[in-house]
Length: 184
Image (tube, rainbow, N blue to C red; front, side, top):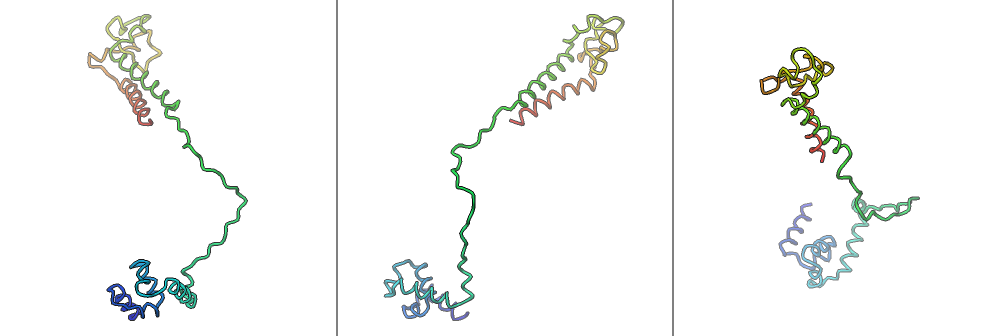
């Protein structure tokens, strides 16, 4: 190994003569690859001779036969096909995005309108205390079945009254809108 590395160092330093390249076809091939195709011709060596010597030296050595891998031909029943010419179409607007936009908008608008007391017209048939005529203009979401009496109504948000169901309705609207915009 030391002799080969010394010869390689001499080749790289430009100190190796044509005699050494004629004797060692591997060094000749390396010189051709490093210095170019015309290098061997300038030194008086034929490229064909160096290739032939290189192939003979590789075929004599069993360890180097593994450098060339023979790949068997591929036999298949599949027929070749043409590649697609256009990319697959992707729907930019899905049905769910429109539904999410609609649901989110409805929940948000109804929730804000209820907080401001704009839905008090639904309590026209209310009897007893705590009705919209008494100033309780915000619907209680948990008591939607009691809009005809005072249990279904509360003071508006302007009076500092806001409940967890009101926050939930607004949250559902905001989450639905955010979900719709994040899916785009």
